[in-house]
Length: 174
Length: 93
Image (cartoon, rainbow over all chains, first blue to last red; front, side, top):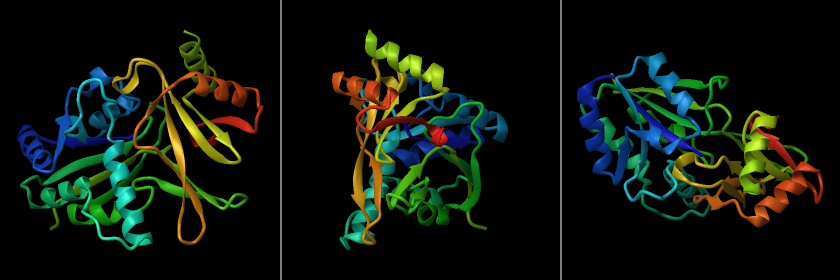
């Protein structure tokens, strides 16, 4: 199940990123281990690789204990937004995650890791991209959001490939 | 707990969670019991959508569903290659 992992480099950024999340109807769970997520091994590797101060999972703030713990509703919202805007030519509100990125651009946080993953274990290879905060929305504006799509020529269908987590090394614009 | 035994056993034999496929399209993906705050096994179903160019694409449903008798029956068909069902793991293995 998809999760959005936020990795911060210092203690001060924890408070700042929580504030950015809260004002956009989101929250960050730093003690994600209790939920036994399928990407848990990957988050540990991510923290080690980038020498992160802390990493947490971004979720909708409507989450309550007993609900499925994952970030997919936030990702699905972007997919819905894309199809409504691009294909159905409807006007709709910007997804929460895009509002979060807008707020991130205005924050004092200099750099952050934003990773998207489904299952992630020690054998999983990731895709790494460097982006400014201002580029995040356009990068994720697609039906499959963070995943690449691959065409099956026999059935003329496109499959979402979530096999390789996406790691975005994001920073303020220079 | 035959559901859980099957789901856990498949992960062990296939090296990961499995997705049930039919006609080249994902039907549902199976998740292990106790993951993501859930108690039992769950599945993510896929819905078919079509873009303006006529290309269909399956999207995971925004909510997971419990792994029930129907899922169990379909998964068993997929394991034995019946009913047009099959199983794959991540990366199409």
